[in-house]
Length: 206
Image (cartoon, rainbow, N blue to C red; front, side, top):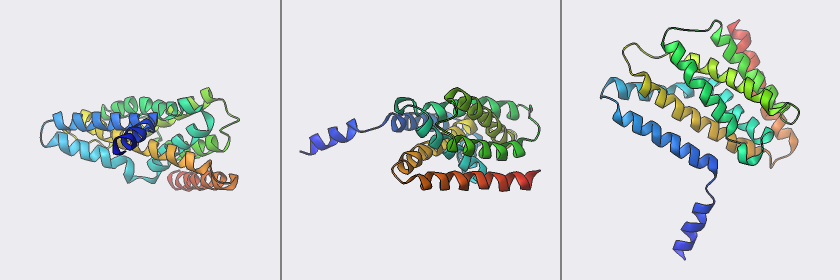
């Protein structure tokens, strides 16, 4: 009976959970292979950085939530995947000294845009949404890359913030799926809270 229960539980593992586990395992492996000292410190810093700012938290959760409504169930992880694919080169450019102007204001604006995507998830074409998500990913990557301390390993640091970002996207996917089971006002309230926070942050940065 116990074996049957275990097998049944395995069959219920979602693709999003499998992807999260794979990326997290890869990040941990990268950290383990890094040289002691700077590598480990860089991984820890990268892992903590996305959790250190409300703008990063809201943006990545919003991407997951938008994906739940805007994309077919089998493709829900495509939204987070696009964000992550843009996040890494954005960070690499900033770490290499190539920074975009007005990044902090752009990040706040990205939170507002992602909230607007959530509100209009069924009216805005997914292709348009992917472009906006990718632009947000580059901006957030710029902020991550600019925070890399001199002499530290970018590879370990990137493994950290990629793992943390994947976790936040998974939280967004879970939150989006949960809100879909509630009355419509719950989704609109969540959207308003995210968008309002973005507006407040933008006003403080311009």
